[in-house]
Length: 231
Image (cartoon, rainbow, N blue to C red; front, side):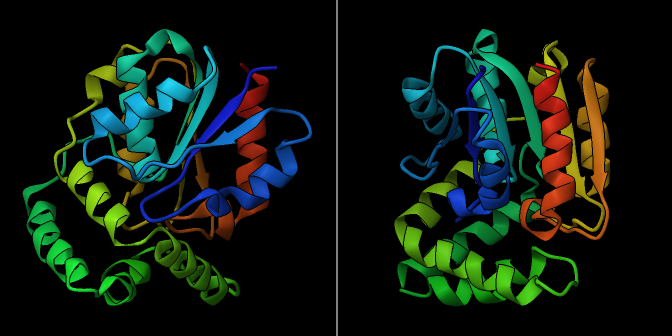
């Protein structure tokens, strides 16, 4: 059975995929890789590859999806299948880059919780009955990871390359999935990735924002299961 590597989003860990791990771990070997030990996408991807099985299915959400695309660029023959969720294949916009410096400065001054609460968490989710609980989990993950990971990840995101050509060259089984109400990585970005990859499937999850793995876990797990069964 092909192992599955899960790459979480910025300031998240394996808890982001708890419902999927619970549902799929009886059938697939699952690894969740941390992505905070370096401040470049190239180094983050290389570290995952150093510990990964020789061939694997790869699923990443948000920043995890961006790292997944860099892994694909570095080692395309090792990626048996690709799931890109609520992510962005393009280089960072100048207006977003401009916000990174002040955020990093604030976190260096000890204000990680404030930055997460005021500038990041409110952008994650659509309205729903579990919104408050999921936001609390996001804060727990962020505070457990700490300021050094925030700074490394911010720099890696700021300086990331465009991966359009990487996706254009990939011919393996792929799924492109996002919450319909994702404002950070809108549906249009996912339509672009779907069009770039010749063998991809587009899945739009209703009543979900940036974190459909937690907001709509059953729909997301079902979509991932369909993808894994095609590998």
